[in-house]
Length: 112
Length: 405
Image (cartoon, rainbow over all chains, first blue to last red; front, side, top):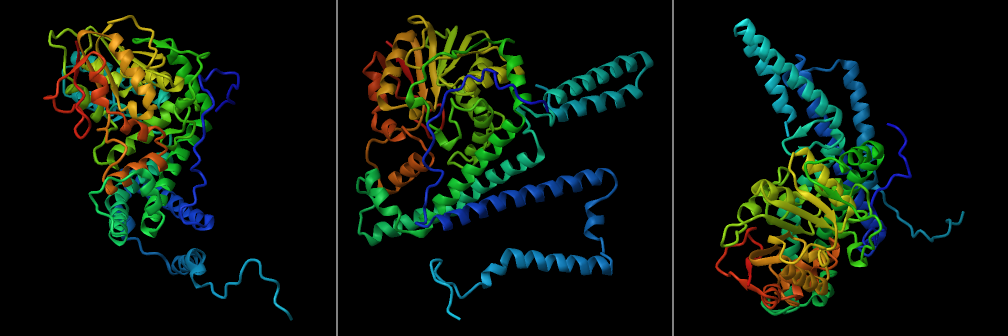
């Protein structure tokens, strides 16, 4: 990919931007941002799943069928490694659900 | 346009057939197969991921999959979140003891909708999905800016149709908004046409239409139902506010012998429209011009039409455009601007709720003004006769069959 030529004519004029980029629906921008993150995560997760489907379909044309993938039995070492990975993933994704003892962000350090 | 799958199919079939035929015939068929393969190479050089019928496939599998999610999200949103949002709105009406048949304004809607989390969640999720869809598309085209700009540069001067751009034109402020929250709108991003085309493909499945439009099905269907002048003569057609030209192309395909023009204020939109028409080998003409000041001679067109353009312009501009249509349509010619059924300044609470969401969160900047115009009455005032018995060319939209008196 060569560098774009900035002198190129594009027949554009400046647009009037929408004011919705930072629309706070929940009355708390942090909650809005969290929902945006969830939708973005869903987008990326599906893109990854769909890519796996394509990979499996291509592999099938090379003799590695979806059945072979379904029936694959991991070795003991693989199982142990994958379980560790799974636990790390769950902890990362859902560990925050167990957070408690919230203090106001403006709170002073506790006295010793 | 030849599809990638069609090309593979043609090449394979030719080679198989060749082996079963006489040597001389087999040689000819093999040549066809080679020609098909060469055509495939050419196509893939231009479109790295090939084409799917009339649609150039998005540039990467990841982007295509992101877009696929966006489409799926719209379907689910329409089926679940929108429903729950409407039910929540109904509960609000009951709680506030508001008659569901009472005329409602957009201000009354705004006062109510912040009071229920289901409404807020549905609106927020819809907006987030819309934003990511546009961002993913825009990021891709800008990341490969040189490739896509080069394609348009090469197409600008090539036919079969013509392209007229107006780089010094003063674009009115009302046309510079980011409609549908599309970044850059129709005028501010060099890839506005690319982005709009792919982005709006997902609109059709997630709205009341619930149909696909990746093969221009909706545009082709609408054009097929457009009424003709009584004398049957269709020599010249204008599609104003043509955007990236799906309707214009469909018009030229239905009327191949007619001189068909698509005009739009968006330079990048008509540029893409022209390039795409070339790809489809359709000789429609595109020009960057204002709908209210088209520069065509009086009575030049047998049919003047547009496809959902009016709700994207202020009410007073709509009236000027109707006036221009009167000037352009020859006596006995047809004027048919396709757009939503207008609903006035008030509606039922549920109706206004839907309209306000689309207006505000989809940045349909002028839709409320559009609804306030009594469209058919305003056209009828300007030298057109309304043929009221005609069915809508686009089901669910206004029946706008007018004949120039």
